[in-house]
Image 1: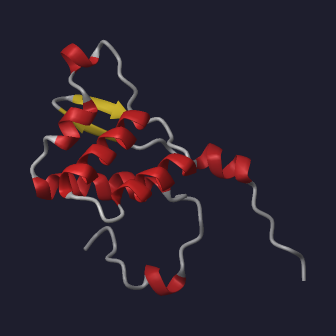
Image 2 (image 1 turned 180 degrees about the horizontal axis):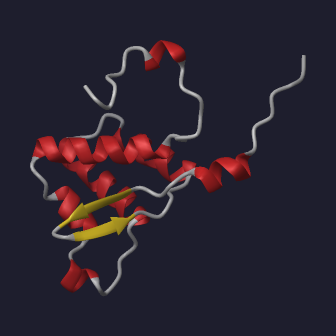
Amino acid sequence: MPTPTLDLDALRAAAEPWAFAAGGRTYTARPVSVEQVIAYEAACAGASAAQVLRARRRLLRLAFPWRPSFWWRGDPVALICAAPPALHRVVMDSFFASLRSSSRPEDPATSETLPSSNS
């Protein structure tokens, strides 16, 4: 039986960057590294709510490096962190979901439990 191969270059090329829109503008994130995500998770382990928010700000700033245009366009990190709690959770869930490869085959057990896009 042949050994399955995984083409990391093809996975990277197929992955679309995470983006969100606010105030009529679309903000596209830069990829964050595995090390940066691990550091975020370590900072959140046993952390207070304020410490978790600071860790999220640091991780999001890596995805959205500061630019002078944020003064007039709006800072995506500030917009995300100022969102009401329910919306903040949805945005962060979407951000972390984007870190998983969209071109990876789905686990059949999970795909059956997920709602379809037309439900």
